[in-house]
Image (cartoon, rainbow over all chains, first blue to last red; front, side, top):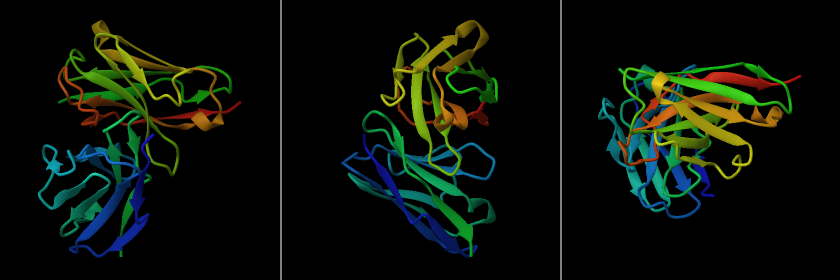
Length: 107
Length: 121
């Protein structure tokens, strides 16, 4: 199966700053990558699919880039509600697999 | 507004069968792919499998020998059964929708709130 590795495990950011999260696939997944946000006590919310397409209702401060094995999620100007866990998920091959997550915490 | 909600026993004994129901409201389950995903405490999610409204299923190979999914169109519900559970099956279980209409996208745009299932005697 394709292993998804996210880094860093935790990132400390001041409100208003930007941050870039990384996700690496163990083999090429082209652009078959989704990003999710998970706030405490809530289900994951789809942010990005196709590596760079924002899902419906997702603010423009969230942007995704990358292809093949290396991907990033950039959040510009973090707001209080953005401090959460972020997961990547590949859907290039079966079984579908997720990364271990990156926690964005308040600095 | 589409909503999904998981239900079932929150405690299952080792070696027994975990059974969960996902009730979908706000839209018909027809023509979509419906998924089960679980998340052990402190870990990333794990995809369990999916079912299309035709009844066609596809499971994670790591769980395939123990999993059965089914659905009831008349009740707008789909189901998960996981047999011979152990402590390693303790997790937060989610049901989720693939947004592809007849055409699977294989990511998830609507999730249930999740339900904790603990395997313990």
